[in-house]
Length: 465
Ligand code: ATP
Ligand code: MG
Image (cartoon, rainbow, N blue to C red; front, side, top):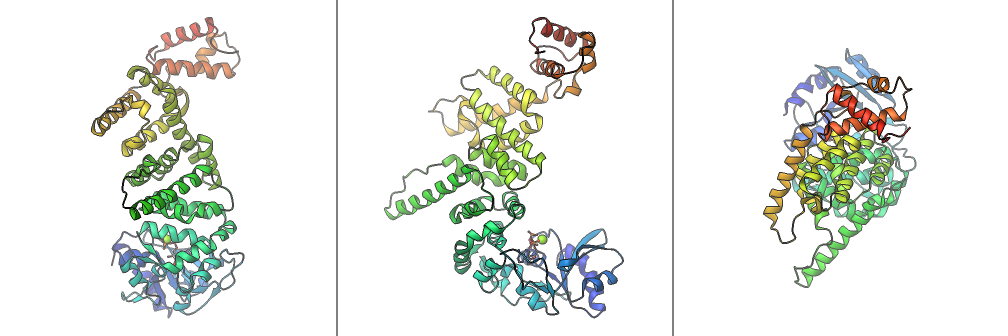
């Protein structure tokens, strides 16, 4: 019994007291049996939505057409869903209508995997008609009943299978795996938003490496409704090739064969070291050598918020620029270039993200940046990387101004300098030049020197009209 379940127990008692059946279901039962921390507690009941609404003082009708009522209790929200079946599936998607039923077993039968089809009563007894607990103990992910039927009813389950197998380190049962491969082309019927949500949970979850491996082997991402950027497919193909060749090399008892992408593999293995999903996505894109445009394309296809999109592109862009523009620079020039890139273009947030990624996954640090001789040992390389990142971070933290509003002059001061000239692109450009000059230590962030510097820029005509 976890605290979260104990806290929700009164809800079951209220429904039972009114003559209904009520149980905990799904993820909360699965995670309780694993001794994991619960994300949310879902409840299923024989009571109709109207009866649920009548039973509790504070309810929100969140999904009435699916039989779901949200109940607010003791500062928490709980989804209470009436026992239901989903007989009429349309076009391999979940149905828009459901039938309410009175039997718990019928409700459990409509669920996707055996480990997700267990219920727990208020007295702690487990209702487990499909032997989910056995599968959980043995580490097996298996569809409830007939795998072909389950995946055809709702093809999103194909992606969910990978997500749960990866997050809980489960082996996918043979029949379920065969059905995944057999029906993967049905993914074209699934809204990209739903696939995006699952992929985000895979990347941000506890088994990103396992998820990547399963997606690569099953080639699932080649079957989505909207195409995803090419590097994903290339990386997946590479992964399959490596697997093949390592099997072959093992058969031939030759262990020396080189994997084709050691950096990629090291990076994907190390994703787990990054706490934030945003950083993991960016690290993944960097490892797979995405361009900024491909990063944006990926997030747009998965329907993620535009703000996420811009941040991802900025981190990728910063990495690519650092990689391409820092060849054979001195340490000092590199540090200046770093400042130019973050103040002039990509921003502090991207820089911080990039630093987190490089610290967690040093394999991604561009060798050109380290300027190391090929014969240097890996331990030296590691130290050099740590030192370099610390240096860059320090330089960033010491910046006198990172945004225009941190500058000691306003746009209007600069306009006055030009005798009240009308604002236009020239003004923004001048302000950015001033910002960069303070960042590079060429001008102190004080009014007089900044205005003098602006006057100098106008005099030499370095600002466009
Ligand atoms: P988590 O929230 O930790 O990701 P969960 O098991 O709670 O895992 P949800 O997506 O929140 O997963 O769904 C709750 C439950 O609803 C699942 O455990 C499963 O029983 C059922 N379920 C959810 N989506 C589907 C689906 N597409 N097909 C069948 N059953 C589903
Ligand atoms: Mg859940």
